[in-house]
Image (tube, rainbow, N blue to C red; front, side, top):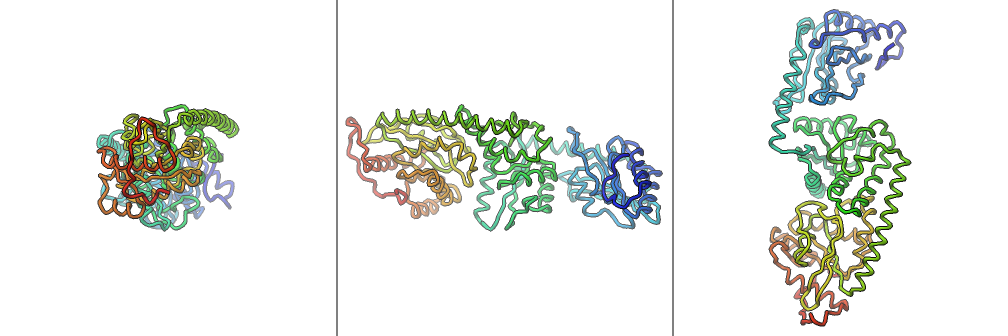
Length: 561
């Protein structure tokens, strides 16, 4: 006997058999139901005094039977790829008069059903039929369009196939239009969380948008959700998720990106409810690192962080692990490691940790050789995309030019430069920091960041043109303290040519620092003078051939200690 879903408690075996017989019914591929099926449903529903729901595929075959309203029907995952709708339609009974309920319409939208129909039952006979279809994304209506209710026999000849084909053609046309307008890339809806942080939450959402663009996504919509405490199942609550899904539908977006770290259970529930790809902030950052990892060392570090993130999320994934995909969130080891079991994953983590330990040993030997050269070391640190690489290029007159991207530099770059009155120095760049840096990523890059401990002076590069610069300064300083870096700092207020006059003066008053525009060369002589004076004050001896008296800088930065 075929399975009957829903509220089956109390049903007699004979009643269950009659319900199971509905699996043998079939309507035309282009029809909602037949007159005979309508009468059978009405009579059986009245006899049981319960609604009955049927799920049809596009061939007109009954594939699910449930006792209860449409929500009792488990809709299988759609196998259709070329269409925008699921390929399933629902016909269910209502005991008494009344149109489609809100849960009916939500199910229509959430599962992208071809159609949702409700058949009124009056004294055991079929009455009026209520019908709804999805609206095209750019339509003026809501997410669905409700057709006029009519006596059910007037809908017996209604061509559901033609209506669905017209809707899918409209969906495809709008999707093509968006692709032509935006170019290639995943379209994503971004979700920021405000848990009482106020302006900082807005800054974090803007940063999430920049992360998404760096990862290759097209930001279709941004939404900041105020929620003092997270919903344990859906993070932002089921109602808000439905609103976000509506936005994704209307914006032709296939990805939801949350600005927090989701638990494994929340990610699974959100994906199950929406049918969209769901990423959190940590996955987004890991994906960007995977894109930019080019050296063997960086690839090992990123893969280790990704696998540590994936390990606790293996529990309960089951068959989902066999889905190999592409795009944001699946680069790097995600494409090759999704099907390994927990034991093999742990073995791989152990192997990568061993490799990283060997790399750390080689790096330590390199540092010893560099120390024997006697050249002072200047570390360049800062928030991601603060302008560190561009500043190094300007100071050393060599190396890579900077890019306007987050985490464009993953490997430590060391370049020789010259300071008047001191001689040669070494500048070393490191990976940029970010607020709420993923712990696994920070741990994986710890050996790289330990370069900073050997620096004689640190240049803390702060983007003065960026909103929330003061908070970014505090993030970097907190991470440096966590890494045990105690070197003397000089603050560089980069991109000074883009910063507003008031903002620049505010930062100078609060933090001190040296305004610099590395691209234009503005402020570089004063920065070099301050850097040379700081190194000389720390006992660094100038090269005999390079000695020139160096005047003390006119104003010491407040962040010098």
